[in-house]
Amino acid sequence: MTATTFMNRRGFFGLAAGAALAAARPREALAALPAQPSPSTLLTQAHKALAQYQARNPLRDRVGIADFSQPSRAPRFYLIDLEGGQISAHLVSHGRGSDPAHTGLLHRFSNDEGSFASSEGCYLTASHYVGKHGRSMRLIGLDPTNSNAESRAIVVHAATYVSPEMARTLGKIGRSHGCFAFAPAELDRMLTALGPGRLILAGRF
Image (spheres, helix red, strand yellow):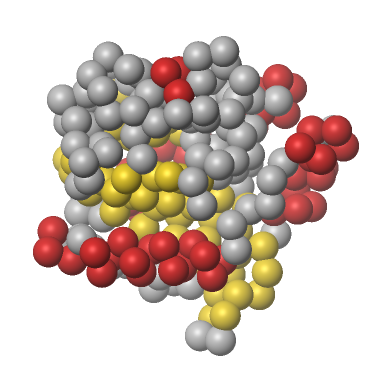
């Protein structure tokens, strides 16, 4: 499930998520979805992160933002193309330790080893590799709240438990061990657009 916003120099023309979500989900599920962050909020967060971590020399063309205030059935990972002028929204998992009862909502963040939770903060994308989840991308935590990302093996990878069909029929997607897991069909786009040397920001927006 992807929603795209196009932007020119004067601003955004509008987010196209509403119609797609209405066609895909029952009315009662739609009613529970919180409002998506505005394009201006996403842009502000992207530029703020780039300014704060400029000493790490991140590439400035694209930034990823995971808004974990949204339920897992919502496209809540925003790929922001600052040069091309568009934003696309994608499904992404949160950690099982952040949602032990598997409600589809993130209840807590943790940076602890063995927590299996998502960590908030800014990540620098690093090298691609092939591991137990297939093609993946390493992440470096840049904040005290996600400083254990490398030792916890928090990475970007694909998972079959992330899909529009699952979000639509179950009202939630599966959980990771704290990694940013995407639908298999989305992985190539994420690996190409976001790494290495770019920023991913995770939190509640």
